[in-house]
Length: 455
Image (cartoon, rainbow, N blue to C red; front, side):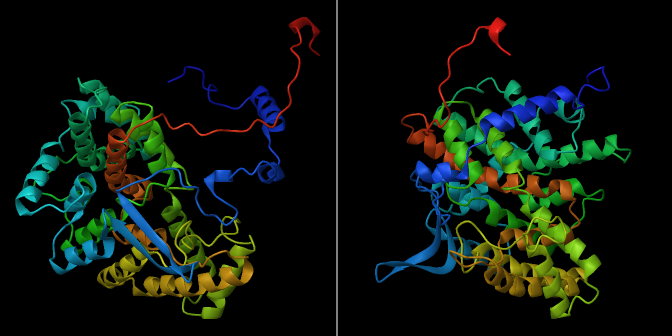
């Protein structure tokens, strides 16, 4: 810790330098059109620029009808298998299916019973941290930002691995499976460490080899390690639905870019964590929960459609909540008519809300899910449809499970590390040149001026 108490304070010099950078680095919006640059790697209609090929997952949001692209109900496939079938299989067979989803993503096919048992044993074996890691790393200088805490822990794990820089396929597979197994432990222990520093009691439960990932999260987090089967089952479904989502999302693309440089697995996963931490990527469900908390304060009758409509119109007019002009949880970069993950979670939410005695809140969510797309389409020029996305319901689920807000984005990471791992391995197998996009210079060339002649 810096000895100077003002070490992290802003100074007038920093303000001046920031303003200078603003003036010299700003690029006019019209320049992107002039030079035909796809800003954010998207065209004017928001469609992503194709930057690679993948066998890991597929997102279907449009169909070709009479030679034209037509929006359709969204579908998501993991290794060619519809994620709806994975979820329905887990529900009908009444078992936790995140582990076999991870196996599917890593291996390209679903495991048979013997393979699944062996894989679960591998996950359980790797769930234990190195000796004294909790004391020497997690409990020292804990952070309120658990994504930063997780990133620091992942980088520290590299110091314990004598093959940290080995990017041979078997070694990377081992490292990925270890990290998939350890992410829940790192996140929950990081949360406990921070709250201990804030004056709360500290309890560190040992991981259980018998637990699924969802059960492990709840058991490690709660003081008495108790949970209901349905709580764990719903959380397991959330993990499945967040495990992967095509190669084009920001953190997965980051995984490909960083892997193409030949770096180690730990650095790659920290880069992905840094991407997911950004509120434009991994923090949307937190915004949804906070938006609804604000709505419940300003809407007296949650069943009054006109009153809810008035509140939502205020959001779009930048007059309510955070004045962003957004109804959080509505719309997606790819899906138009529906997000299949949101559709699957809605039924989970309804059942869990009955178990938790929060059906009125569920009805409010359902009302907003119906009114939101209608109002957005009426207020904005739309190039595609808009519907509730996965973040709309996942935050409510976490809220009903009494999971702290600080863990919402880490929960996303606990699932998505499976997809990152599959894409890292895919990039290593097919690695050609380092991924290096081109940028067009739009500044001016200027002569060098000697120091004593500068004004």
